[in-house]
Length: 109
Image (tube, rainbow, N blue to C red; front, top):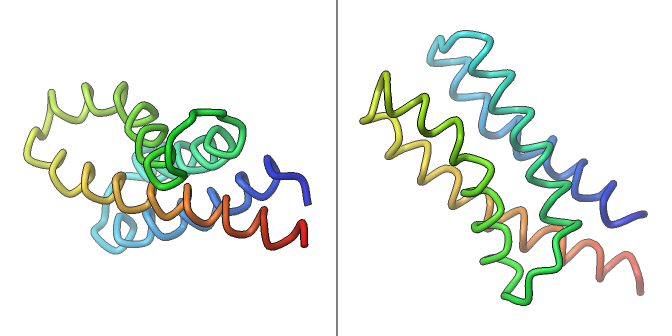
């Protein structure tokens, strides 16, 4: 499987993981869709990026860059919401970086 396709598919999984508590918490659909799309893009970009750092760090950096623009809008309305959002971004970004590397190497063997 192409590494970028794998990144996109794992991004979908990360999006589902991120959006599930948002839906349960009753957040508006535009926030849910935005978060889901962010993770799909993050998975694709993590798989496509050639940063010369550890894969977990590459995932965290890429995910935080993806979060930067929406974080400004979130902070304007609810600055306290950035703490759980930032933590989730760090955790899922790191997991994506690790998983994309792990499964792309495993598939090559």
